[in-house]
Image 1 (tube, helix red, strand yellow):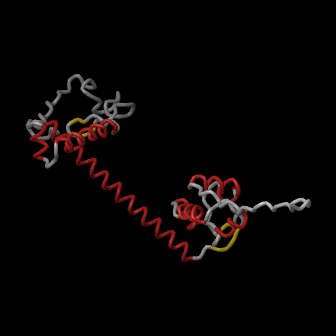
Image 2 (cartoon, one colour; image 1 turned 180 degrees about the horizontal axis):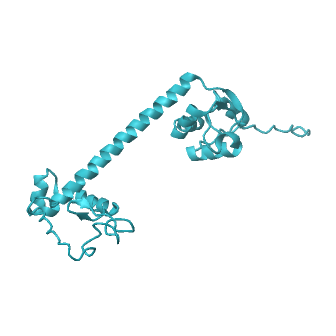
Image 3 (cartoon, rainbow, N blue to C red; image 1 turned 120 degrees about the vertical axis):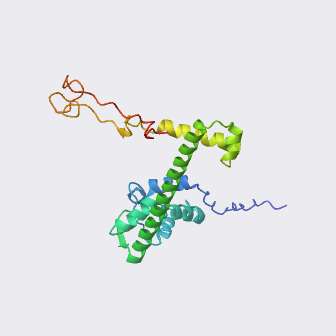
Length: 228
């Protein structure tokens, strides 16, 4: 056995740990902390190939997958598209101007905004139509003498679907603002100062002229004007 001491064994070097996969929320928070000039406040158009700049300034923090997913969501948001149609240029990680926005990119953003606006209007119209149909269904149900099962069959619904529709219609009716009272099929008007019924004005009401004869009101049932 040799008396010479053993040579020191070099420590094994482990490869650098890969970046942890961040969720979109974590990715957004990291970007806001590291580059607040670009990722805080109102949306700003990003410099082209900004992902390479982020990886260079923050090596090992973001995986390509996580960063790509965040940027895809960020640049597809409505607020970002609006910024693309209004901002004069793009911005770098320090919030400084970094290239003009081409007319082509600006036009693409404007067309996407128009498409989303049309879809939203169509959806709102469909929802309003569905609310009107539920209101009519509730009115018919309240006036019907049929059993719930027969009424559901008449409307082409299952009993469960009918009950769900009626429950939703009642909620929507309760949420609607109160309507002004109706008189002879027309909204009654306020009798405040200067309005009909004000003292000293012609036609100020039945007490304005004690000799004035009151005309009988028409029977709404006789003339079919009663709102059924």
